[in-house]
Length: 207
Image (cartoon, rainbow, N blue to C red):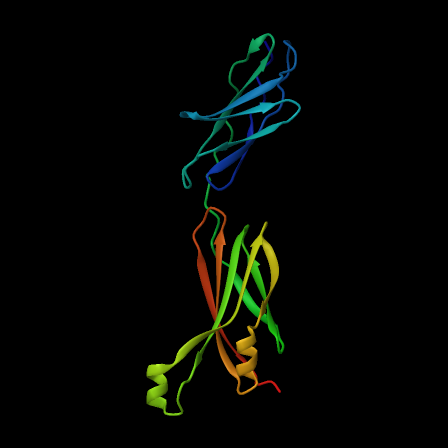
């Protein structure tokens, strides 16, 4: 039977925790695998197969504290359980992000987003088209035109640049007058809830 493994270490994630296990010292030979179990919930478990040293316990409840023990196994049998790891608490990713306009041109504008993690981004720019010179009529009959749309999937946190290309109709209207654009940027983190940021920018009239 292998020696009892050293106390494992745990790192919390989103509804999961990654557990790292090390061989214990003593007679009985090295372990060929380790079984990790959440203290108080034997259904939350994972297996480390040597030479790997870590595995991930999934299906945990965000906001709940967990500790983990490990047993070692080889051809001779299974060891006693290790001491419990330091408690960790899984948490959902913070769904906040920032964006700014970097550059505008005749055919597109460029935005820079600072994202908290992996997920999907959708940009939609719209403008109100007046159908009359009369202010009262404009308020009632204004139409919304899509100026641009852009989509991108990101794999990790950090800064990402997205180009939103103007539609042919938007470019044509812009030759007549400036466009006031309402830009809505929506970020949906992997496994999380979508959140939107709205900005307003004016695209000057082009020749």
